[in-house]
Length: 264
Image (cartoon, rainbow, N blue to C red):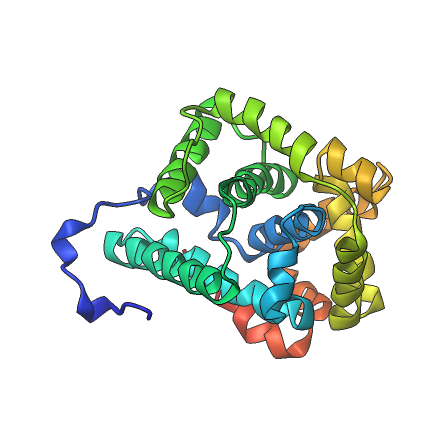
């Protein structure tokens, strides 16, 4: 059962993220958030635990709707309000517990780590694609924020620094990814749900962002049309046309939800 704001002792919570954190900057721009989840969509389709998505059927049947549901929780976690952030973590833990109870199986700890790790990776590379290079100090800050998130989600055996994370992330890429029938099916569901043209754009974004392991397994070329288009898109921000372009690229039923992403 979900907890609500009024149900909890607000003094027992500490902030997950500081108000001036680079992570809030990354997750406060709709473009960056959409890039993050575009990259994650490619990598998670290859994850050996992707079968958990098919247990409920929610993501395969409605991947975009599920995306915005996930973003809602992510934005709550990234909130500077310690109550809202920690409450979102507790609700996610309860959702996972109910899912495991219904399936009579435990989600493996490595699968939780995989998702957390890809959020670290795609937060950084998406921000770098759309904004600027992330400094080493900022990368440590990104790791520290997601370390606190992982701890709040009860994920075990997390690395203690960005450098340790890099090593463990590569290990997880080598051990936990494979192309399967579920990979192919999920990619088809993405295409069916968002349409041929938007799926083409999604793949071009993925070409720009994904790591070498994902690129190899999905047979993605290095050249991305997005790398050519990005300078023009960045210019469109200056003349306030980016919202128009973004709305053109997304299904109309999600336009209002996209506007709400620019809130942090």
